[in-house]
Length: 206
Image (tube, rainbow, N blue to C red):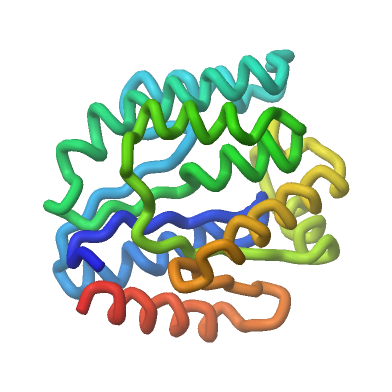
């Protein structure tokens, strides 16, 4: 594996995904390892504007429109961020290819092959070197939702949708187990999860 890998953090809402990313950032800063991080949707300047459109609670855009907006955002990120930093810095991404498949295909029923073709068109042969997948159960997810001060469009689906999405993530992870680490916030403490992440990061960067 590259010493400057592309690492992705995936998971449904309130799974601990973004918290786990922050733990990784903290570790890399401590070790003075060069990295760049961005989120999807979001990232490059135009991508952040597209994020505002997609996640707006008042948005009435359908799943097909959202798919094209996600891909437009990803195209900007590939051109403006990834290409410039690939193999030069560690790249950390909050959501990437798997999220599009999990949400738009497994959650919303859009054609899987179409999504794969779109990703291949935008990214070529680029694939994440490793993925941290955070999972959460219904009880903990709903409890964490109540603590959130700001919700967006994707925080307002029913649990059946999130359950389908999470099962989609897990199905994707089983296809290449060596490139995934599942972080179960239902079973492990925050400190245990942090230790698992740091140990894996150390191993990846050897």
